[in-house]
Image (cartoon, rainbow, N blue to C red):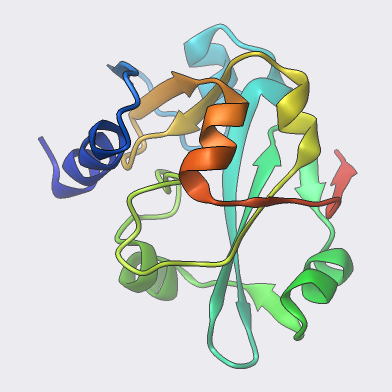
Length: 157
């Protein structure tokens, strides 16, 4: 088991959340790939999108698969100008590679916001630390686990 996957599993277990992590035969790097692999609707996929502020701090936006982060709205929430975080910064701060960033189990605590559209579903699917592992969870439980703040920061694809 990879260190990234083990960290996600440990975070779920330490929170007392009993979910199954699924190893998918095909990649789940994109929301479309994850939805196809899980047999889910696109908006049931949790995208973990990281932005970096001028300060260097990273911010995590948990977004429904059919939505995109509106950079201006995200910057308002972060209270500083933002740009997409690079792969090196994402790995250094979260411990995950882009395409497998889980909403939990980060190496460094992050400010996190959650797209309210995710709360429209009874179950959502999120990356489990690798591009081939995902888990299904009640979005309200995910909200509690992540300590995220629900906020409107998206536009539709």
